[in-house]
Image 1 (tube, one colour):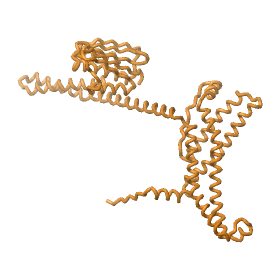
Image 2 (image 1 turned 90 degrees about the vertical axis):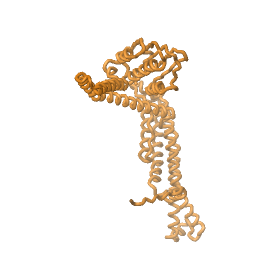
Image 3 (image 1 turned 45 degrees about the vertical axis):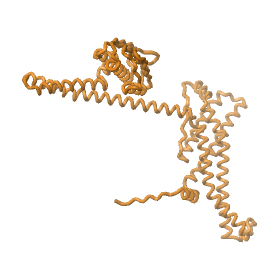
Image 4 (image 1 turned 180 degrees about the vertical axis):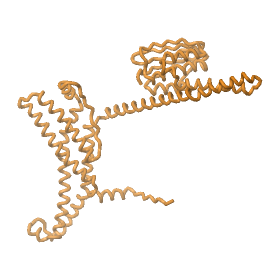
Length: 422
């Protein structure tokens, strides 16, 4: 196997490399072109905006000016974003824009839109800063190349410079100073140009891009959508597993139990067959409970009321059930509500030593409220066991809330509020 040798450059070497190669790097000249293009666009845009605003002085009414002013502001902003993307390779995120129906409503929305005036302010400021940056960059480049050209000319044609009385070639100190200044500007100008482009980019992102609150809001929306997609994908995967087990493994176990039952009836004196038959029935019962815990088929077919009725019927604790929903919530919300009731009733039977339980499911202010109450010994807390802690995590995964009120001695009340659409 060939040996790979990695050469690690230290920081001073990188700095000197940047200094020496700065004048010939493409990004230096792209940054220069960006500044020059910015001055042209900003200058032309400011002139157009000024002409539109000054036209109001000459009795041109606002209904004529505004339909031209606001599209111009947004159009120039879009042109600047294209300039940043095309010349610097940097993205400036666009601002949200209101598009109501109707010409008058659209003009009013843009007039009171904060983003419109942020962009207009950018055009005013950029006309000054970008013009100054472009002039500074052009001045530095022209000075650097001009001084180096004169120094080279003084060596190649000293008589021509002496006749023109521009530089005295015999003055060695002046010639050396010109060379040093030219070389310094040649290698310093790329840093200045890139710094000016970086400042221009920062100003554009501050005024042409969304502010911090908008960025955080957009980030929250993206994370919420991605989390919902993950929750839906996990729920769909549970349904697939439930369907495969119900249609495949469970049917094979049913067939096996039936064959063992027939063999047991034909051979009642063989205890091995009887033991295998009982084990097959026990495995089938456990598999049914496991499949039902993944995602019950009745929940998809008949809804939350029928699924909870099945839980109440199988519960060892007598359960009073009341479901009052005007319409079916989303499948994810139904699944979470089902597991909340299932886990709560299981805890009431196993740990709370309850004699009875009550389940109420209702629609309250755009949410599905699930309340499970038992008359057990109480003392339940989400931090004490993995069951309630898992319920809290499952409820919070769809932006729901779960509260547990369980004083020592009981009763225990578990309340879950779930969004109708998740």
